[in-house]
Structures are given as C-alpha cells and as structure tokens.
Length: 356
Ligand code: UT7
Image (tube, rainbow, N blue to C red; front, side, top):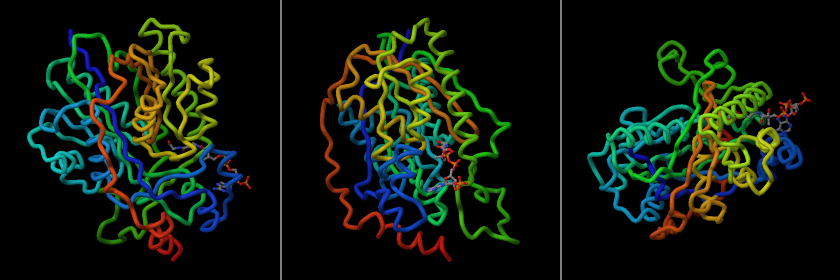
C-alpha cells in the first residue's frame, strides 16, 4: 500500500507589512476593532505576483525535502489569484523552478483550496499516478481588494506555503479527509464580474472586489469545520484526545477559538498565526503547517487535524499522520526577495484607484 509522506515544507511571506494602524490611516477603522473582531494585527502585501510567491515557497519546500525540482511529477497550485487564467499558474511555477514535464494544474476552491489539493495529490500518489508532488497554496489577495471597503480590506493578506509529498510504504501523510461544498450558499462570498459572467463588451467592469456576508459565513465556518473534523475522527477511529495539533484555516481568531472549544483542545494544541498574516485564503493552512514544523510544534508520528472553509462554500477537514522528518535537509535563503517599498507605497495606486 502506498501513502504520501510530507517530506518538505516551505513558505513565502512578503516582507512589506501593513499594520492595523496603517489601515486606520486609509479607511475608517481601528486597531482595536480589527484586533477584537478578528485577531489580526498585521498582514503582508506582496510586491511580486502569485506564481513568484508560490515558487519561493516551493524552492524552500524542495530544499527542505532535499530533492531537485525535476524529480517532481505533479504540481498543484491552489489559488483564487492566478496571474493569468491561461496558461495556469502551476505551469509558470514549474518554469520558474527550471524544470519541465510534470502534470501542472491550478485548483480553485478559495480558502479550502490547499486541503482539496493535498487530498488530490495524496490520492494520485496512492494510486501510483505520481511519485513526488508539490502542493502549493498561494494568494495575492491585495490585488482583489477594494481598499475603500473596510468590511474586507482589513481581513486579507498575501502569501504562499508549499509541501512536498513523496510515495512511501509507511502509513503516514493525509490518511482521512471529509470534504464538500454547500453550493446553496455560494453567493454569500464572491468576486463578481470576473470571468465569462462579466459583460465584456456592453458594460465592462471597472473594479473588482470581494462581496461577502461576514457573519453568515462565520456561522457556516464554525458548523462546517466542526462537523467535518468530527467525521474525520470517526473515519480514522480516533478520539479527539489522540490529536496532537489542530492546524485550522486562519480567517478569524474567534472562529478558531470556537472550533477549539468544540473539539476541547488546549491552547498549545492549536496553531494560530492569523495575527501576523490575516486571511491568506488557500495559503493559510500551508503557511501554518510550515510554521508549526519550524516552531517544533510537530513531532515525528504526530496526529494532526486540519480544517478549512471558503467560497463555494467549500469545506474540508483532514487527518494527517506526520512522518519522520521534522528537520529540513537543506535551507533555502529568500534574501534576494527583499522589497524596497513599504506596504502603503505598494498599495498607493490601488488605494487611490478605489477612491475614485
Ligand atoms: O475565509 C473565508 C472568508 N472569511 C470570512 O468571511 C470571515 C467570516 N466572518 C468574520 O470573520 C466576521 O463576520 C467579520 C470579521 C467579517 C465581521 O465581524 P462581526 O463581528 O460579524 O461584525 P459585523 O459585520 O456584525 O459588524 C459590526 C459593526 C458594524 O457596525 P454597526 O452596524 O454595528 O454600527 C460594521 O459597520 O462593525 C462595523 N465594521 C467595522 N468597524 C470598524 C465592519 N468592518 C469594520 C472595520 N472597522 N473594518
């Protein structure tokens, strides 16, 4: 029997930081409101595009796995911020990695995208269709945001995370998952006027923005992730006391705390980094998983539960049995990706554009 071990991990969190106080100088909001309602203190604004962020995360993951890019035979990029619709972002990542020939595709499931992609790549490895896979969550949410709309501008950030999967006989990697989509509620979180829905000739859209019903999604998120996590535990024949770490989607710290309470987990059993990055959509779980290993929160053989929800409304929970590796084989330096501009400078045109 084949399994898909996670043998490498990496992330790219852009250097330009946009604090809550920065935001309060642009729109009618405050550090107090954002912190108390969401847990977010700051987020990153990228000076490079989605594929470049994804590639930097992938390079670090490959170095940590100790393998070369041309050993990879499957690349999945979970994103809702593709640089181009055609060709896809994954093919650009492969090109930037200097390799060729792998199956490359993008997966669009918003914030749930990374878990959908992890399950997909795991399944391909388990049936023998792939041997080594790169699974990436990468998002440049700052591109979509209406910087004049405080409902959404304060919530999101940019970033990327990646893992390398490898076929193994050892029973580890993603072992059980419960995933789905509640399409009846697909309209409560959307980016309208992007794609063939838009009136391309008669009335072309002038600005994009994320439309959403925050409190409604909040309720769906708590219900959906909790139920999926309980189903996964039952499938895996585990008790919640068997779980070492929860790595949840980072959309709102109050959602995470509610899930934590529901699953009766202690603070140290929950990976939280939303205060530093905000909601990076498909990148949140990938970055959180990477940081959990870096911070020594994941030990060999640990039982990890992850859960996410997002536009669609997609939802997922997954049980991951960590393999043996918790120390990177090689380090990869991202020094060359320093940015000379501040986050506010990077956003200046977008902020003015949204006001007009
Ligand atoms: O990952 C998938 C996408 N993620 C989500 O959709 C997140 C899910 N939802 C949430 O996290 C929360 O619902 C929000 C953080 C979006 C909102 O929190 P809330 O506690 O549900 O606040 P609310 O929408 O009920 O708004 C409360 C008040 C309103 O004012 P009034 O009507 O009570 O006077 C808003 O106008 O807060 C006001 N408000 C703000 N005030 C300052 C909304 N946004 C802001 C803001 N700064 N940025």
